[in-house]
Image (cartoon, rainbow, N blue to C red):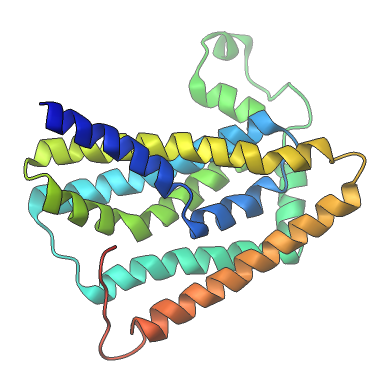
Amino acid sequence: MLSFAAILVLGFLLGMRHATDPDHVVAITTIVTKQQGIAKAGLIGALWGLGHTFTIFVVGTVIILFKVTIPPRLGLSMELAVAAMLILLGVLNLTGVLQRLQERYSPTSPDTGLSPSTTNQGLWLSRLSQRLGRYNALRPLIIGIVHGLAGSATVALLVMATIHDPWWSIAYLLLFGTGTVAGMMLITAVIAMPFAFTARKFSGWNRRMALASGLLSLGFGVFLSYQIGFVDGLFTSHPSWTPH
């Protein structure tokens, strides 16, 4: 039991470390540069982590319970989806589309059209919609779900090689995901700090940093696409995919 407990704690810590992967940080930076509040940024990070955890848990559970084999081309295709998401975020940021969507769908007042009875019920989704707006809530959730594709098969296969009991493996996935949520909350809060403190006095600097994050997202997405498509062989007749 002690060894299993140690493994589960390790899963939580590795989940927090997983949140610092470069593709995760680049994607969340592109989103957070449009936020001017640290608390809201942390909430966005939590939503990203929840989406990421959802994919890892669902895909990982299927792999663990049914001993699914992931072909190299499928594994690389899931990773390519992350690269495509980074390219899309970069393009939308550089063209100003993200900013326009942010301004259009962000709540402009505390009144969101909810009835008093609905608000008093304390429904989580209602409070979340009121605080961020549906667009700002769904965007990191969807991006997190897509990013989870890249790591779901890898995490599940590594867990299966370490923990032979499938239910303990699934528990590990849950704690790994919880660690990822916590890690993303911390990362997004830290990234948002300079933008929150300079939003009014240094708006020009904020805009330049937002453009820089868009360029970084686009460039990193193109790099990953080349790495996955040609170095790892997704676009060739001999793909090579090794979970790591």
